[in-house]
Image (cartoon, rainbow, N blue to C red; front, side, top):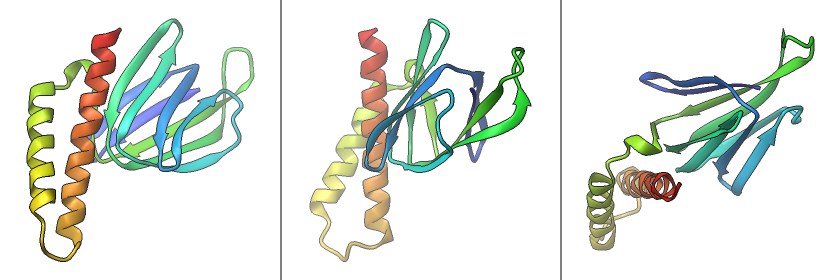
Length: 146
């Protein structure tokens, strides 16, 4: 399968993979070769993918994941799947600054706790900021555990 993870700033990952696990809105899900075509909304969280014996971990923000067959073939003349992940932010777990993420989390939670106005787009922005900080902390924790 060919994985492409892209943010508004450009490509983050382009790799041939065996499997991927992503944080869907309804829960984490996995994709293996030959998966049915699919479009899923992603929530901020930890995304992992495996290339051979190596598993890589990223923190991702909200976005979308699409699985689609391609017309290209592999060396064995088998069609491959294309997995396209479009997210607002993505960072490798090893590159996460956990101290900054914890600080951002504390600030966002304090602002949410003190919020007294209507739950408008500014409120939703705070929730997104909090969730992105949580995703980075979770990814860093997985990187440190391995």
